Length: 86
Image (tube, rainbow, N blue to C red):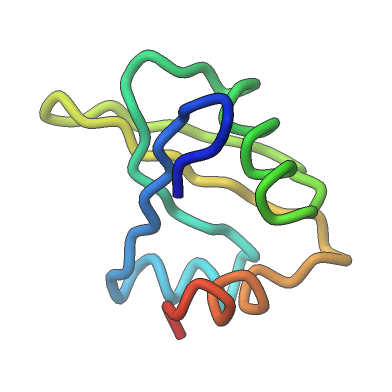
């Protein structure tokens, strides 16, 4: 998913990621190391037309993982279904 801003959001599908979608309303993405939480939040809100509650990031082995928690009125499972993750 590359948009005008150019942040590459690559959804991650693992057992843990699916559990986070179902239990915590969190989507997991692999993103470019250069982008900030604010840029990631803006990108997710624009692409999926949702409101983001919180963004957490993890830098591990030269990769950046973003955990994007959506506000409760936007079920993450709907987005995951649109992406073909579920």
